[in-house]
Image (cartoon, rainbow, N blue to C red; front, side, top):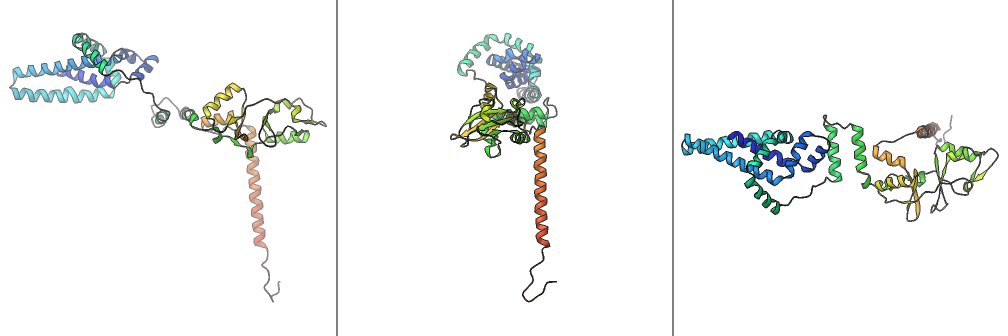
Length: 347
């Protein structure tokens, strides 16, 4: 009787602690234990009634058996200790560690409990279903999902590596960030106007920038005429010839507001078929954003190509030259002789 009570008590904790949504996901992924327990977990109130009825019957039977052998107070004391320690505390602590495993193991016994107590448990189920209707499954918020994913970093048993975790965390943050937070400011953007003359010298300047797409704006930065792709200029002969920007093929782009969320921005890149979009604020172009900027935000790392490294190296060399020139100026200023005082002669 104590063993039966222990199993009922443990199953009560194990089955009721299983999340129905989690069970469904595991069953879809082929988990055999979840498939075995899911039909029982769906009938929550019927299972609960069957377990508790069986448990009460076992407890009552144990008291009756002991009462025939021992005196009243001895039977009461011993049955209480047996039920509390071995029928409640120990099994609940044990079953709580692996609720799915224990529920799956005793699933046939649980079905037998339902069959035996069906006459009483079914009416209780109908009553409980009416009094406490099933609630919809609660989904985790974006921040909760991010926290759950972050916990995989500190768990050696996780199947996710660090890069996968960073990508998922970055993707979850897309809707919380605006495009103006990752755009390249117009002050640091290389752009041209429609009346710009393209000749050999100008082409060399564009090539030195290392960009594959050049946005074309008006002088007031209120209109974008499109993008000029460097690959469209490959077959054009600029030796001794000059052209205007509007003579070249320009690819249309749409302007995007600075408050656009990054997940929406990602969808715009997919549907528009372009990799660069100008960002506007109050009808003034304030910067540009590329699909590479979005990918870097998801990955959490900068993506550098050959031209990026070259620009970084040139910038570093320029800074070193500027620092050296500044140092030379300071040393030269310190090396100048102090002006002679009145009445003294300089050597």
